[in-house]
Image (cartoon, rainbow, N blue to C red; front, side):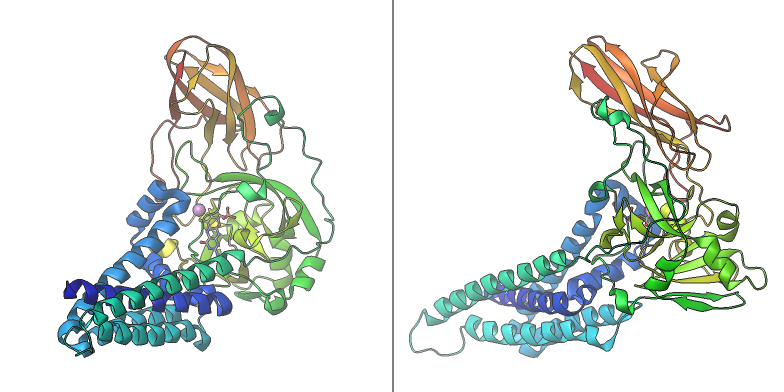
Length: 499
Ligand SMILES: Nc1nc2c(c(=O)[nH]1)N[C@H]1C(S)=C(S)[C@@H](COP(=O)(O)O)O[C@H]1N2
Ligand SMILES: [Mo]
């Protein structure tokens, strides 16, 4: 079983190296961690259909699954390197070194990489190679020992120690990365506040989404394996491109501008009909037009290309920003400063457009440009350039495929048709007619609307469908579309058992 020992040597060396690199990255810059750097590069290189499939099937765990796969593939390759080094040590060591060089290259290829990001890869290399050489010595039966059996015991002891050590170091690094969060900061009061939020239907209809989504449960979608942690003192917002006066704002300068407070429902283009990538929050921020007016447009730009601190870009049609909607640079969400997962310290919010065309998190630059001259992260990957959110209604209660007791109950949920507004929500039970539901409070055309229909449920299997009608009279389409390239459509239909 010598071969197994050699394979194990490779795997454990990789494990020890990766864990050490992860811990060092946790201290310096999480995204430079070897596994995270390779993972991020894989995300960027993944073809659009595969990415869409992963988001649809794995949801928010897509990142976990990706990281796990990168990790497993690395360990398999390291095992092969270990086996090869039974014949020729240099081959195994060379392969391990190559793996690390790839991780280092991935870290350096991140748009905001600095030379410091090579440190985790260097640590990985040193720890990996030293561990490999140590284990190979122990694994090798051909090296003469004083007593038989010493080598096996030595190998097992060494391997066990390294496994425990690597797990502790790796988990320690992971916990440190997870524990890094930005502190909430005090923000000025809005010059244009939103009205007090009315009481939502959640107080009376059990199981319905609350009128305002708590920040802690607000969906999160981005390409980042490690959440960017922005240092406020080093952050700035730059406005450049086709403008008369390019300028840069510090956070203090930005938050000193007149603030507006608005209730806006956000939706991700990857949301499937009936899905959970939608959330409603109260945003505090600076009107985007105020900033653009200060810069003064030059020539005929047609898009605002926004850049995040990690180099990620989004393009937003200038016409949407200019049409009077409350497009803003948000610095607050639901009464506090932004959390790091939702874009601290500043992000774009564009009512009526899907997040990938108007909601740049960790915003650091706004460039006035044209679609002919520049493309952004998702538009380079063939997603739509102009993507208004499609009208959609969702059933929150009863849950799909659930069993509920017969008798008086309610069918309820939320519906959205941002920037057009929801006029009606209709429910169909089995093959019956579309029935008008009762609507929750009206919080404006950019916000979702809660709805419910009292239902005297009779025993048996029932099909429930829902659709919304916007204030322009357009009925939610029953035509099915996948999220790619401009958002899903179709009508949600669920089945429940009444017993
Ligand atoms: N920097 C950055 N901003 C981003 C993204 C991203 O990947 N990186 N994803 C966008 C997408 S697809 C959506 S739907 C929204 C989600 O915002 P949330 O995570 O706060 O809900 O952020 C947008 N802004
Ligand atoms: Mo999205």
